[in-house]
Image (cartoon, rainbow, N blue to C red; front, top):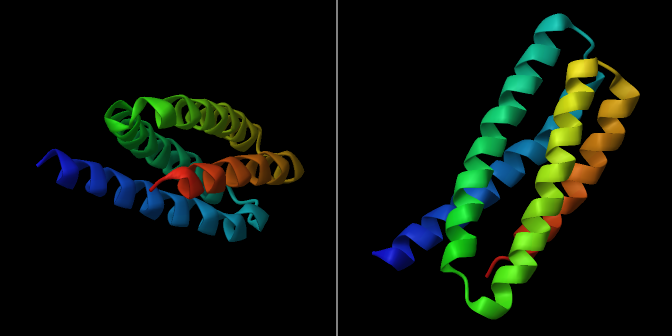
Length: 113
């Protein structure tokens, strides 16, 4: 059962990654509704990522645990900066923060087995 939970967490992480990586197209719309929707989507996906990464890290072997923890911490630092950029409603700043978060997210996904 534990293996199924682990695999489910990995699949949800990959799904969230795909969803977040598809947000780039939404960053050119400067409407009030678009900013609100993007902010809510980021916070929701971040919550799922946090829960699933926590599960994956706690289930990982010791030699992989530190790497995953470091990558997850880096990702969530960038996600927090992205959330702040979205709240500021600055398209250029949001795009820069998004690129940082996207690279960190890709690193996390590549590190999952």
